[in-house]
Image (cartoon, rainbow, N blue to C red; front, top):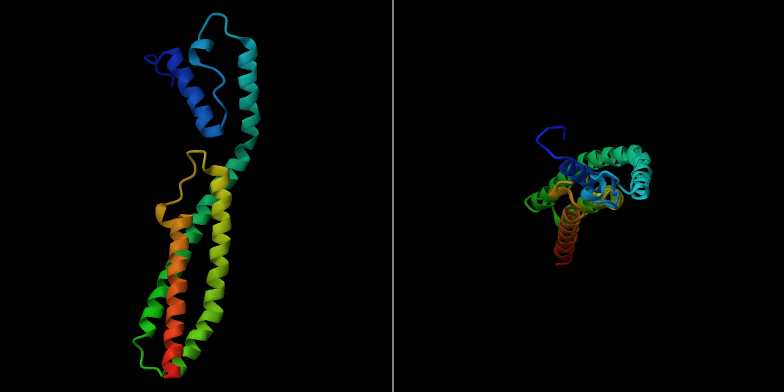
Length: 176
């Protein structure tokens, strides 16, 4: 902040806090230690060196921010697919197909769609873990709550439960 109403110490505090928050550079100095006529040069050099070591990682940070944006788009699309699949399973119970025909259609659906959905779920979980590992300590980690690891797992669990339940019901109808 270059506002003349902000003191040197406040500016230093803001700079140290930003370096810690944005780049993970530990606060090795206090503003009052630097805002003197004779600051400790070794401490300043150590701090600047730490800051320098953190800065080469900026291109990597932008890579993870881009990955996060891509994750959000992909996770949103996957969640919509899961919602449609869940609705489809619920709607299937209302069709007037014979249990054998329903089971055949359902097995085909499980073999094709659920396998793809499972692969995408696992890929999204891996990507979320990478993002969490690299961005969680920063202000840049901002996955919407409805697209977190927990939300995806809950949606997947619900879909697989409905799948298994529907499959069991169809098998029981055929046996009867």
